[in-house]
Image (cartoon, rainbow, N blue to C red; front, side, top):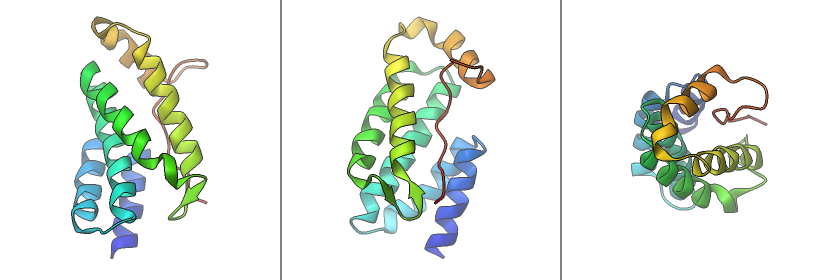
Length: 129
């Protein structure tokens, strides 16, 4: 059941259903023991950061992206069948882009992310290996 729920959370994340992903992964995180617990929490925090970005909450997005990338960093290059390095790098890139803008510019930044144009920041993806 845990693997099935994890894959459901991955699908929700990649469909940018970040709130649903949060609910799915939170249930796994709360029941998990280490080393899975920190791994699930890191992905969960990245998902919640993306949710905050969608809702123009600059502080929430920056804080949770920072926490999430810190938690998944040591699981590289891959773990539990996902490319952690790619998730880490894409999340780190989004965090760095967010840190370069003032909080009051979050709405226009959000639009760039949602339209995912070339050379624009985008939501990270979870790639299965």
